[in-house]
Amino acid sequence: MRITAESVADGIREQLFSIGDIPGVLWTPAEGSGPRPLVLIGHGGGQHKKGWEVVSRAFPYVTSCGFAVAAIDAPGTGDRPEHPEIRRLVAIIQEREAAGEPFGPAWPALNETVAAQLIPDWQTTLDALQKLDSVGDSQPVGYYGLSAAGEMGIRLVAAEPRITAAVLGLIGSDWLIDTAARITVPVEFVLQWDDEGNPRDSVMKLFDALGSTEKTLHANPGSHFRVPSFEIDSSIRFFARHLSAARLKFAGGGSEPRSR
Image (cartoon, rainbow, N blue to C red):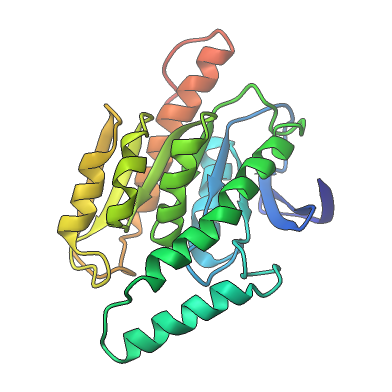
């Protein structure tokens, strides 16, 4: 891992980094040291590691919970080079959308193309982050991702045993059913009732397929991009409950996080 830039503001330390050709960002409390729980945050389609939907979650996780938070650019976004195959598939999807036609096989092909690179990249990033004194390899790891990041998150959480809790949602891909069944960690799952791209029946079917014994469905009225801001507060409580409690267990303390 190579740190390319570092700054401190409002009690948060921001470190831009690269791991080979993977560009990322790590946020940690400006004060204090030692290992701490880590939350990985995925970004939406066409967005990047410092997009609003990432930062709006990352900063409260750092300031309210004292967690480390990391994000990386997906292939073809942010500081990554252009990805010709992703560009080709996105163009097909946009053409079909403009014509009012179904996306067809281009949509699952796009997700498979992104996942083939992004899932190993997340695992490589986690390997590197856990070698840092500010993160360590003894603390629990969470994942947050909605929409395209929910699609990738289901794949990542199913494949990565170090992730012990996840906030997912805004996705209803039928091809993820079997993958979702392999997830057994606690999950908070977000559904927008009027999501034009992810019909509620498909999203609830994917939620039902999750193999987790502890899973909660948060359904709110509104379209895909109208997730209520209070869902951020809910995710803070979710991760504080699961990651902070696990941290105390690892340290030999009690099983409940301190009230916040």
